Length: 353
Ligand code: 1HN
Image: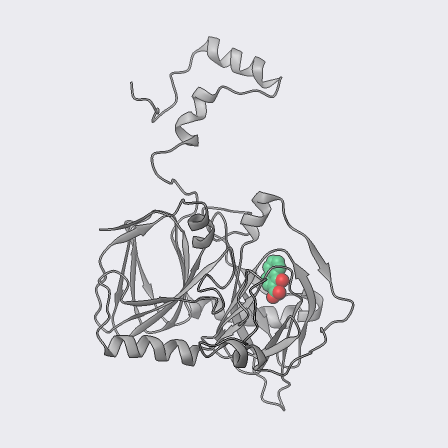
């Protein structure tokens, strides 16, 4: 008999009757669930899944005809993990959704303790305002809305060049729900006051410099938009210099420039380049990860399943599932996970096979 059981003990009529008796006192026998409570490795309920952009896009656009951004507050289709039905979760700790904002629309200002990231998928003209500053969204940009920051979104009118804009929302909603630490409030105005011109945060913190007397008081990044052009340039420069990892290709993590840490305390974000014909080695990690394909075509082998990906597809890798990434042409993948939480708690495990 091993110290930690792999299954429950045998049942008997006597035991079953006893369990019913103690159940009336809100008690339960640990020996029936011990094997499931401390598994030898993660056994996520979340499963691997892929949302194909060419199937999802028409449905997102249909939402634009059914409900306004104003009525919906946030016009979003939740990407729910098929292994977690009814949970509004893509992994056990993370939420994902595709948000649509049409030309001329406003998504009203509010704030909540949940942290949010936006990864822009399609369209031009939209902006988001965070903590008194607006930024214009472009496909491939990564934008943060830290915990308890006011945020509202909008889009230029058609005359001004606004197009339907879709982005991937990533939030730590399930994690905050587990902690029962959710608070939220609406702003008194539909859009917050803009107190700094666009580009102020980038000017202060976007060039490996910081204002001379800056002191870190906020756990989140003072940069709230990380433009794709800069990210792509970095990946390309590293690729040109041959810095290709056999598992990841060329992979960078986004940083808080004031600390070197993660952009927000609960979610890590990454961008990686897989050169044409890349055949990655297999790895697994305890942080379940959501991917958004920016460029290129390829395959993600997740456990026993093989998924083909194309630009703008979203896929999810559950905790501890072996993953192997391969590309047909040059591919770029954005991803996010709860890595900062696992790392802070000394729980993160990675295996490169
Ligand atoms: C939220 O505030 C946004 O601000 C998007 O765009 C998705 C999902 C659940 C709760 C709040 C946003 C959200 C959300």
